[in-house]
Length: 325
Image 1 (cartoon, rainbow, N blue to C red):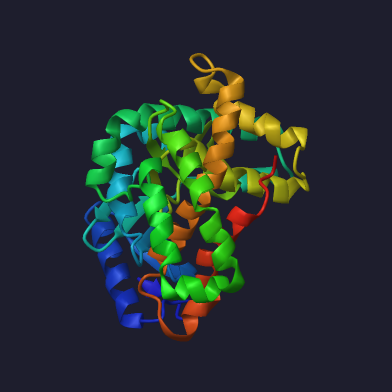
Image 2: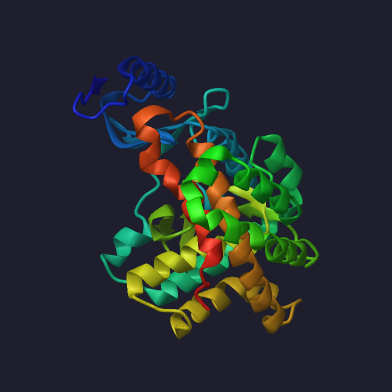
């Protein structure tokens, strides 16, 4: 295939290996690659778009400690094919995956707007997916999905605060965060004892990571995901919704989206209790987000690291700020 040389990963020879693997997998299926371009090059992943005689296909390499996504995609493709883009091929050892084009995203359908009913349907469907996957937690852990269940997070919080790089980044915020440790542990214990089962938590769920399939949805870009309390999903989702709409703390729109997500649990749990658990999850998941960035950047050194590493302690600093309700 022709590789667009204006957009290639920092190590061209690595890009050649990646494209050769993808082209070989497609050729084995009678599909010829005409061109490869690299529209997304991040420290944590490289994504190539392959133009073929059977439509577009996508190659993704998970970098750092995000390579488990490839094996996770294969697992999700077998467990819940209607809710993901089922990969054509994966190389779990290298963190590589090859998938057909999944169609249009919710963000592109919205054309710059915000379709509240579509977001509500999406959140309900995603919540049902999470509930269905609770029985498969051992399988998720076996393919390398990080274990960020609530009972583990206080110890991981301590580990972050003991990291010299994090300490330097936090500066005078370090002492207040140490003072928050007991309250953080209480929130984690509340989630761990809630009786709501851990499951797969996407951790970056928003309209650009959701595909529209008629009146249904499929979810992609699972490189931040973990086994965790399900409600932590709302940390990023509601922030993106607030950013897109200008909604502030206490806005009824955010409560409406939250309640759409919680609806599948309301048959067995009191709504007020669920809302309280969401509050605990928003607190606890800030550490999960910091850990996600640390995983993604584990191999990034030199002058490129400061550009992204401040997200690690930036998420910890969020523990000192009020949540959006």
